[in-house]
Structure formats: structure tokens, C-alpha cells
Image (tube, rainbow, N blue to C red; front, side):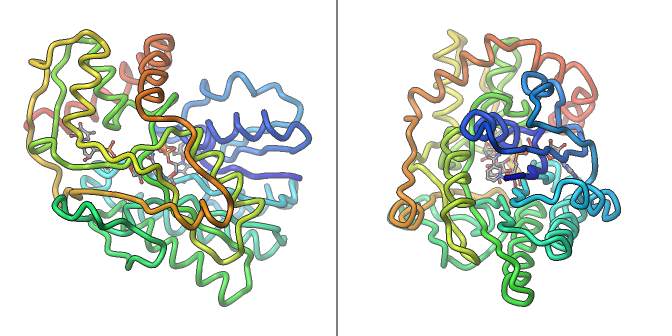
Length: 339
Ligand code: NAD
Ligand code: TDX
């Protein structure tokens, strides 16, 4: 079995590659990644020399390069993680989000149509459903909740999802889609809430909380997401959407306070800053379908997962310090200077 994993030098894709190489030693795993600012080849260093692993630097929008790779590898499964993934960047400059997240998805599926495939899997997000009010804890996103996006990022992901379903219905492409809630864990790029707060707290820098910090996200340990995708690509039904989430809703401010406490840092580091434009209030996934159909349940409790994550950032300072010392500094200045 040959599996092409796009975006495998990023946060979730790299964790997925480690999971697959560990669990299926007889599979061939091919990572296609453009290595944008969010991609880190150093993350994949531990598996780079594995005989059943190949890394290819390339853009999923580059039709010629993608078709050449399919010609060479004849993949059985494609898992498309490659995306521009940061909401704040999409508000600043949407163009590349539409290009990679929508057009890139089209190129990948066109290659699947030409060369044949057992499964094309699209890694999507709960953000396609928009948001839920704070005062209705009974409401959760199910797979039939209407798409109702807020940001250029989530709109580009929703557009891609619709295209994936269209390729299934129109061309019979064997597709599946998973829509997961917020992930956390090792190799999370330090522009996202949890790693940013850990890195800033360790450097005694202000912890920029948007608005009042009351927005709620439904956090899932990244390994649990990888296991769910593994199940969907092998046992999930074609043409179906599966929600993935762990019933673990937390307000941002509570997470930031928890990180302060775990690192022995004062809450006086917390700085309330201007809110994100169009900021989604609450996400909450109903994972009943993947549980009843495929038996998936999250295994890592947040209390354990966050401690493991903090420990990882303490033990792997070089990984994130290298990132935040480079071009990222310019992004940070732009995003937080006048906030
Ligand atoms: P990430 O930003 O950490 O990684 C994205 C990877 O894709 C990087 O390695 C980057 O180099 C690569 N990439 C970007 N553009 C590319 C292109 N044109 N061609 C090839 N490679 C390209 O993202 P992530 O957080 O790991 O998210 C992975 C996927 O999961 C995304 O599709 C995202 O929408 C989805 N998702 C993320 C979360 C989350 O909490 N992070 C939750 C649900 C869904
Ligand atoms: O500095 C910050 N301060 C802050 O208060 C940052 C970076 C974020 N926040 C808030 C905004 C959100 O309410 O924290 C929450 C989480 O923000 P992000 O880490 O940017 O994640 P989010 O916008 O929820 O999107 C994430 O989950 C869904 C991923 O980045 C997406 O790729 C995924 O689809």
C-alpha cells in the first residue's frame, strides 16, 4: 500500500506520518510538502532515512509535479493535509488560502482521477460549520449542520469540501472527508494559541488574549485525530463526512491560565488585546457518527494531553526557538504590534 500524505511537514501531517510508519511498517509513505513557513523538514528528520519513506518538496497546485509524482508512485491512498491553516493570516491576505486550499485540492483530485485511487481523503475542519452561541451548550455540530463559514480560511476549506463531494458524485471518485476540532500536541506551529502561549510564557513575554478570552474551542490531542483518520481511510464509507472531536470544550482564557500555572508564570503576563475580526464564538463537535460506525473514541484526556504537550515544548526548545527567531519575527510584529 502506498500512501501520499500532503502537508506532512506541518503539525498534524507529521504526527500522522509518525503514526502510519509506526503502525504499518509494510506501507510506503510519501510526503509531498511545499515547505511554506509552516512546514519544517527538521520535524521529519527521525524518519527521513526510513526505507519506506520518501519526502518530495512540491506544491499541490503544481499540476505537472503532482502528476509526475503519481506516475512514479501509483498511490493507493492520498491524505490531503496540505493547506494554509492560520485564520489570522487568512484575514490579512486571503489569496494564497484560496489557491492552496481550493485549487490545490482540485489538482490532487484530478491526479487521483487520472491514475486511479482506492481513497482520496480530505482533512477538513469544524470551522466549516461556522460558530455556536455560548448560551446554548446543548447545540453541537453534526455532519448535517449547514456550512456557514466566517473567515477566508474556513470559507476556503468549505469550498474544498464541496468540490470533494462533487468529484464523488460527478466522477465517482472514492473520497472521504473528516472535520476535526482544534488539535494540540507536539510540533504545533507557535503562531497558534497553545504553542504561542507556552513559548511566550517561557520567554516572560505578554500573553495576547483576543477580546475577553471567552471564545470556546473543542480541543483534541493530535494523536487521537491521526488515529481517527487512519480508521476513516481504511474503514470509513466512500462519499461520507466524519466529524472528529472529543467533547472537550474550553474557553481560551482558561487554557492560558492553565499554561501559566503549569509553567509557574504569573497571570499578570496576560494581555487582553483587540479581538480577531469575525471571531467565531464557540466550536463543539458531535462525534457520534465516527464512534458508532467506526468505534473511534478519543484516548487522551485534556489534563494529560496538555501536560504532555507542555513537557514536549520544554524538551524541544530548539525546534520552536529556531522557528520564532526567523521570518516569524516579522509576522509577530505585524500581527501584534498595534493590537
Ligand atoms: P500546518 O499549517 O501546521 O501545516 C500545513 C503544511 O502544509 C505545512 O507543512 C506546509 O508547508 C504545507 N503546505 C502548505 N501549502 C502547501 C502547498 N501549496 N503544497 C504543498 N504543501 C503545502 O497545518 P496543520 O495545523 O497541520 O493542519 C493540517 C490540515 O488539518 C489542514 O488542512 C487544516 O485545515 C486541517 N485542520 C487543522 C486543525 C488544527 O487544529 N490545526 C484542525 C482541523 C483541521
Ligand atoms: O494570540 C492569540 N490569541 C488568542 O486569543 C491566538 C493566536 C489565538 N487566540 C484565540 C483565537 C481562537 O479563539 O485562541 C483561539 C484559537 O486560535 P487558533 O490557535 O488560531 O485556532 P483557531 O482559529 O481556533 O483555528 C484552529 O482550529 C481549527 C486551526 O488553526 C485551524 O487550522 C483549524 O481548522
